[in-house]
Length: 400
Image (cartoon, rainbow, N blue to C red; front, side, top):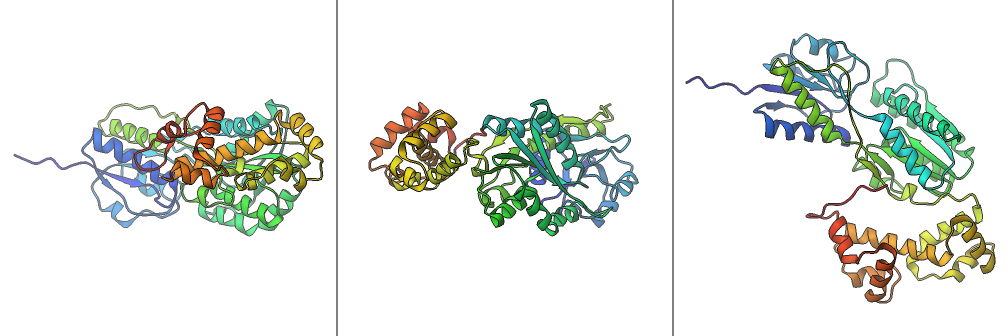
């Protein structure tokens, strides 16, 4: 009996970025459960040239992050191709991409719900994905009748995406000048997490309070960049695994000589992952904004309203009144919310006991922590941890 050879499928997708790695996981999931493909892949960055083995392998199909540098040699192989970069349209090649219209909408809604009515966008003028996200974000801002300030670094023609993004580091002085002119509070959408980290670094050099004066949200939910940013970066999480899965599904149909649509296939993002860079309620009253920042930084140190008043230029009575006018709650409420937010984080990200968490968040006894937590969240700390733990065995949540 003749043994049939497994179809070989080449993956020209980077492993250097969180999005690319998620694409590969989605492709692998489809191949593992729905086909008997032999997947060919090697570690690469987004702008790596085609590996030498591509021209000598008996490849039946390709899933690639296409651009003008690799399209011709891939076409020469005369095998089905699916594009998961979607930088531009290539005739006869299906495309699967994250729906950037929904990405921009989620970013806008996240900032809007936090009270921002002034907006900014920071991106790269020569990057297609940045231009697309700016266009959709501008539409939402204009529909709301709000103002939008835009900064885009320019670059020489014909640069790779990596070179364009590296150019963002080179024009930091111009970015700093732009950031210094933004009127607080401003909600900023950045084209991706790499740009978000650059913006946060620039704000820190200017001593611009984040998120009080400028709140920043990126795209990709990069598992290295976002937690390492200072403060940690909020981000719209795309469903890159589903993009990869759908691309593999389309390629499978093409290999089987089935007809497929050549219109782009758009996959909705998962949602917003909020971190410290947007964990704020926008406040026009700058004295109250400063008080809120003091509370966030010291809520777990055992402070009370008198400490907050002494840290501001207001009397306690003025502080209480202006808090209610700006936020509809008291300084004491704000302290409690900041403590509960920290409790949630420790429940999700650590295996600390309630006694340890109570001590770390300004509560003398675990019973008092549990009472306050249930009053604020309508859940016990234990049930919240079971539903939201990010440790092994937990599920976690994406929230807005």
